[in-house]
Structure formats: C-alpha cells, structure tokens
Image 1 (cartoon, rainbow, N blue to C red):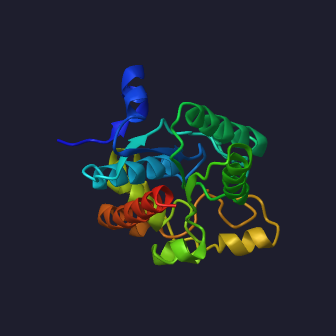
Image 2 (spheres, one colour):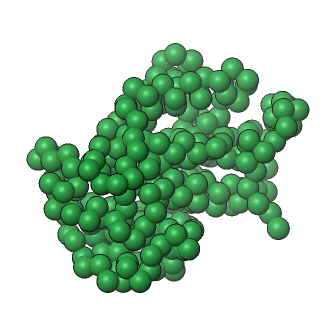
Length: 255
C-alpha cells in the first residue's frame, strides 16, 4: 500500500539523492497549535488537519512525473492567546514562530531543497499574519519564493463549507468533521452530540477588538455546531483541501 514519504524517516544519503532526481522534491510543513477545541475534540486538532491534508496531497501526487512530495515533521505550537484561561493552551510568541519558520526554510534551502509549502490550519489572526510574514522574510533574505496555502483568503475560503465561510467554526461542525475523518478515536462523540450550537462570528468579534474565547461568547472554547459533525463530511472536506494543496504545489514549481 502506498503511503506518504516522511522526510525525517529518510537517511542522509536518501535526502542528498533528492537533489539529483528528475522529479522536483516539494517539502510540506504542517502547522498547528496546542489549544482547546471544545470539550470534545483534541488539543492538536489544527495540526491533525494540516497533516491530514498534506498526507492526502502527497498520495494524490504519488505518481506525478513532475514532483515528489515529502512531509516535514509538523510544527505543533502556534500563536495561541484566544484560548488563554482554558486548560491545555500552550502557545509561542509571534517572534518565536517567525524565527522557527524562517530558520527551518533557510536550513532546507542551504541543502538545495528550495521547494517548500507552509500548510496552516490555526487561524488566530496573529498566527496567520506571522506565517505570511515568514514567507515574505524568506523571499527577502534568500530570494526564494516558498508556497503557502492561505485558507482564509476569500478565493480559498469560498471553496470550503458553509460553516467555515461563516466564521463560526472553531471546533464546530467543520473542524470536528475533519478530526472524525482523520483521528476518530480522539473525539468524545457522546459529548459532541450533546453540545448545543454556539453561533459566533469570530472575524467580526476580532474586528471589535475581542481577543478571547470567553469574551466572544464561547464559554466552552467552541463555536458552530459540533453535534452536526460527521466523518463523511470530513472526508469530503479533506478531498477539497488536498486538491487545493495540489494546486498550490503545482503553481509553486511552475513559477
């Protein structure tokens, strides 16, 4: 059975051989966060989503004659302040995340592996801004364009589910469905089914200056409708996310 290639499972000579291959090696870096996702979903929800879509894109491109896709070890910690006060929130600063992203990319570029795509599913505004800043820094310092599938850009968000587009989707139907498709054993399904819908327009709340889940009206660190989540919806959404990532990969190597 075909499985994705994980960069850190290769030997040093195998990595060196990537540079001589007729297929362009493209390295995917999944990003996430360690933070509460309601009383029902795991802290690493965002990381699982990023990794899951990377794995699916890698499998979709397994026989592609142009590129060979490899997964870097995920970067689990993100800028996480909105969940402050809830047990399990473990965050890093913007400068720390920026430095990690830039240093990782610089190290790969130094070894001749310049085709890199950042894949982020933690949408706290400071996280999104930091990832974008890291892409710009790598371009400025190394003259290299790296890829970034920026899912909150309108053109990308419009291809995802209604709940995602509504902005009421932290640990709701959208994210919980994805985890049910990827890591179902980590979802407390009984608790999930008992949760009421919590409609919160997170982008609007952020625009008003609210910077915490509780202030936004999310006393249990979720919004949306997790009780409506299903593995089937998650699988369909993963198909779309993987397709968007494949497009990003092809666009990067053809620039």
